[in-house]
Length: 241
Image (cartoon, rainbow, N blue to C red; front, side, top):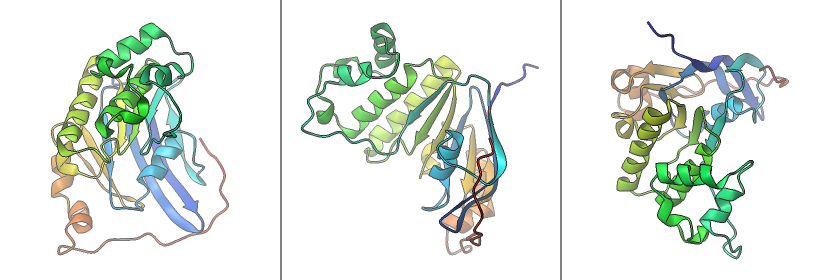
């Protein structure tokens, strides 16, 4: 049996922000070749967890381990550019650290965006912008893609295409994917593992397992139960990674 390469190991992480316990003993893992999705209501700690994995958010307890030398590509939740700034998509991509034209060409070809290279960045649609951000993330020979609600602001067809693109990228490169999503049913054909958060891990498993779990149902089907909110616990924050 071939051992899977562990890329991210989050173990019992606790984070308090402005006296509010945002993450309360959260654990999860991401392996190479695996798509892991974080779902949960607004304020559940999904983006905070992503930021902690990226080293942008401190935490006072627990640990986050990353594979040695892990190359991470990040696609943010929101991306804005000054409409008065003249910039083509090609120029934007070439501003990527250590960018090479050949690597850029490979990345935009992989995401089906070659035709966008000479268009003004400001004139791209939401779905087109996300493809370009994917390409930018892939230009570093990425081993782990981290995406914060990549389909936000994209129409339904565009959301489906973006998730298909993610799955194709995983299959082609063998990279791991850690993403925040708001729609479990959209994830059904694509995600290998889903973690349902609400400050703590309510449930985790395959999309079908999570859908059937009472922890998920109590969050997204209010008639079945009520939302659990962890109690606030102020604490001095120290980085432990």
